Image (cartoon, rainbow, N blue to C red):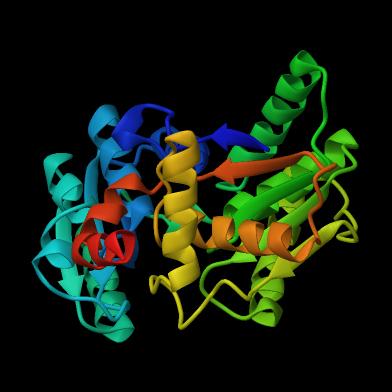
Length: 299
């Protein structure tokens, strides 16, 4: 197995959203924006990376966060990404409902004519360009090592990362099976979001929409819902940590790894396959789950 380490790309403790922000904030700067607004759950990795990128670029950052995950307590509400959000200078707004968050975003947008709203996860046709470029990087790296993975395993949340990879891989003619592991919704809903973003990305690039015959969307690792880890997730974190010294998170990469390990155990991934696992980051969020993680890892 190979691991693409997008968790160690530097700014803001790393993560996949930085590739999207390169394009989203590049456009914002070109448009004269001075304030960026984005949203997510309390322990959003995207919010933390947006805050860090805005700090580096001299932009104000407004994070509108919603209590959408059934977790509370001092660790979930005061450490991990939330701590880093404030360290990077973001102004954090914590709301109880999506409706309250929508109202707060509208208020913030009305405050300035130089404000840009970035979608959840940085996932739109522009943000996905970061992973179109990443597909080219992967092809170059595989060519350098002289070996090609037969399967790519990727977490699927807001779908911008997945859409960019699907489009980029198709444009480059790389014939690889792509397993997209949903972390938040049933496969039918995840497919709908993926297709929407693939269409948007192709529209931005002016290229035909590719066939998705090599793409699978898998949802058995979702568990009770977004941000809720299962026993299989904690087992996957332990497996990666204790065999490779690689830290996964319990929201995204942990669920993707849980699906990967289940596929190996049942034989749908066999020993003769070379699998490339995309590590999208999320380390700080692990600390938000500290009591639960300790209990699971000690059992």
